[in-house]
Image (cartoon, rainbow, N blue to C red; front, side, top):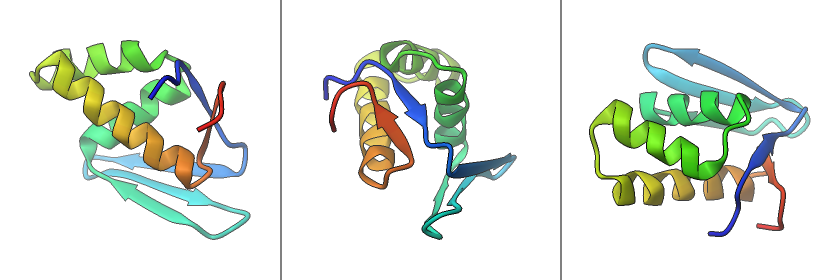
Length: 92
């Protein structure tokens, strides 16, 4: 994936708890849930971090190899993009 940054759709509302993340697309009724790692990725997306920086944060905070974190972050962002939850600066 060659997406550098994404932005959150204005139609999506997120709720983060100790259990993870729940997203709701208020226009289409889509509900998307994730664990605490997904919640952290979401928070970093909301803070407008670049995808590479998000992967570095995840690797550091969760003690995983950078290549694994990068692959997981890219897969998570791709899933959000496919559901219209985020919009890339380039097409998905």
